[in-house]
Image 1 (cartoon, one colour):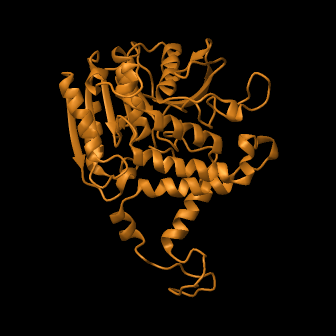
Image 2: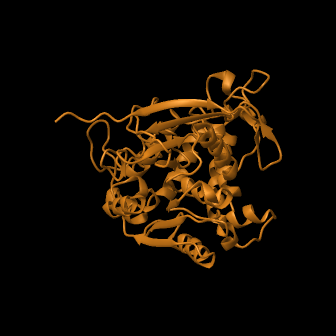
Length: 378
């Protein structure tokens, strides 16, 4: 049987009006790079906006142009799949501040040079604001649903709170309504690793042809640990030693090479990340995540605010999913959001799923999650 073709398009929209930012500045000529999958129906009611996580991009189904790997959610999207492209029109945009076609630190400023650290500090709501402008350009007034995991879940929550009439459903997976001190601490370690790399050059490394790859790799290694679970790391790696190039097995070098398999794995994750991600983008996006506090966002104040008030104007139905081995955004974070939605009178379902993979479970093979997504989106 022939494989059915799926309509996939990768495009870039340049916004016609300057984009206002939470920091008080505005950006002119903002580019939003996005991928669509499926067919938009006549009344434009079947659109699902998928928000990506920190290290992902718009290539939700199509192969990544730099790595050649399948789209980051290819396991879940397609005809008859969990997110069924026979029924839904999928939109996924590279976030503002990203490095896969949307305007970010590597983009050219009006003077023709890369913004670098002249790029304004952005927020999660700024990212969503750019994607709302994309929806306006596409003529989509109301979405069937918004969906996001991790940082994507933050965007989904911000969308629901700030543009409550523009979606009928909100699916938030392994996420939080605000970054904790521990979350901020891990991000700061990564940022300092990048900025301590001599090749960072204060952010002005683009003309040198060689960015702070060592620092970015260390940042990725530190962050990747938070995406895994202790159980998963033990099962996969334990204290197993690396095989040596000469074929020697299970022998310590008594040095600082990657003796343990987990060390080799993390180094590989770090190095491969530098091939597809911009270091300054990492700084800006992690900072946006750290600033995220939905209760504060809707209260307009500095600190404080009542999370339930964020959902007061929403008529959407919500679904929250957490994983029992996720210690980055544990179940308690999703439960806090569920309580706030209940207090606001919003229809919400909440489930904690069992999976050995930690925070990254939403990207991996968890059949129970597939059932939840398919059932909720319909």
